[in-house]
Structures are given as C-alpha cells and as structure tokens.
Image (cartoon, rainbow, N blue to C red; front, side, top):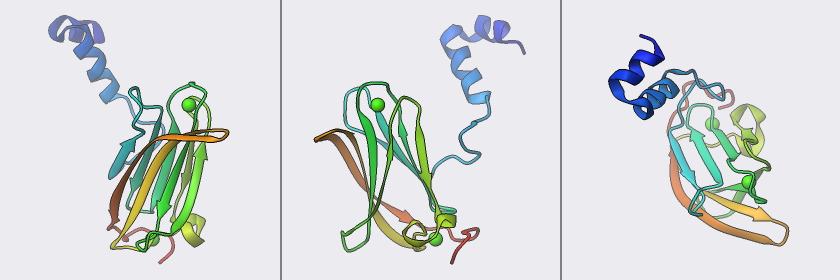
Length: 141
Ligand SMILES: [Ca+2]
Ligand SMILES: [Ca+2]
C-alpha cells in the first residue's frame, strides 16, 4: 500500500505515524527495556537501558544550548559512572563490552538519572531505578 493511499484511508497524520513505525530504527536494532526523559516541558534529553548487554545510551534531543548527562548509581547509592551527549541528535553509548564499571551486574537494580547541563548549571533531572535482568548475551560475565 502506498503512502498516498494510506493517507487517504487514515488521514495524513496517522499515515505519517504509520510510516515512522515501519521505518527501521537506525540507532539500534533493539527497543530499550527502560527509557526516561529530562523533566523540561519539551524534553531535551533522554537515557535508555537495554538490559541485554547493559547498553546505556544518552541522547541530546534538542539544539537548545543544553547538553545532556546521564548518571548510573550503584545499589548502595554511590556514583558508578556518568556519560554525556552534547548537540542536537548526538548520542553516546556505554555497554558491558566496554568492561569495568560499564558491565552492570545481572539481576541487580541500579539508579539512573538524566539531566540537562551547561557550564555551571544542571537542571531538569529525572531519576528512576531500573533492574538489569538479562545476562544471556552479555559480553562479560
Ligand atoms: Ca541540547
Ligand atoms: Ca553485565
């Protein structure tokens, strides 16, 4: 079915949404298990976790003068690592295959926080606790 015919049937906005869904996701083959955005009204930042492979991705979603920083906290509340992205569409990924702190323990709950940052300023943070459950294809035990 062509986009034009879809548009006729569904109305243009629905057809556009359907086409977006149909397009392959170039950033990652897997949908994240967890996702949250910064707390500004039109969220400029996002962090996602794919449990398999401990894939943590921080994305700067807007060219708004703010960069984005994600924090990962150990179960005892101490900071495990942080990762930045700066510039519209820029993203940065850490995962188990990077080794060290980036290899999250399986069946363990970590704290995640995502904020907008600019020199001397950090704001619009959102935080959550996400459990890392899947270890079947982690590169490092
Ligand atoms: Ca930005
Ligand atoms: Ca792991």
